[in-house]
Amino acid sequence: MSEAPAVAVSTVIFTLRPDDDGNVRLAVALVRRIRAPYEGLWALPGAPLDSNDDLQTAAASALYTTTGLEPRYLEQLYAFGQVDRSPDRIISIVYWALVGADEAAAARENDNVAWFFADAIPPLAFDHSLIAEYALWRLRTKVEYSRVALGFLPETFTLAQLREVYEVVLGKQLDPGNFRRMVESADIVQPTGLRLAGTPHRPPQLYRYNPTRDLTDPDPLTRVASASDTGNRDDIRTLGAAS
Image 1: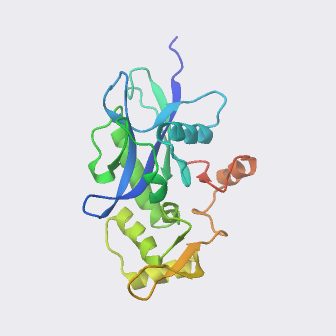
Image 2 (image 1 turned 180 degrees about the vertical axis):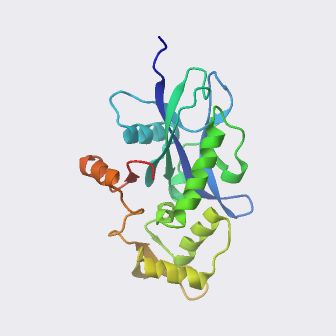
């Protein structure tokens, strides 16, 4: 009788980072494998599932241990369990996460932990290239109908900064006037009454996230998870299951 498959958690974590030309681009955090199989190849951050942890806690813990990052947004993506995905048959419960540029700049980086632009990810270990591709598709799909773009931004921001997030994620330019009308009608941000300092012309108005609106529309499993969550829910916007 064969042994039951092991279970691990992995995370695809996105942020926005400037390239050498100053252009803001979508980036993904990767870790280099230091043991077989696939020694030396880059992979997604992850760890075996501890029997004492729930999935969300394990994903956040593995991410913090490898990169020093605590995501603003963490959502379960998918379960990958193809028989031939790893030599020892590991089922991976994968999450995807968002962090702001300021937090990403302070992340742990060394020879074995680094950021790669999402359109220039090297070949990854196991089936992690497929996982990263699927997570990027999920992000681009979700940003068009939810408010997850706010997970990339600091506490206050301009509408131009918010529009830039959408443009980078979607890979296309958006009309500023139409974008402003969309944001105002969705009621996802609130004016702070303050303006951005240090600009040469009339300073743009600063906005903040509307705390009465979640980053996504909650589903029944989300509400159950939130009711039983005793952790710091103010720091991480969480969905308990893939949608």
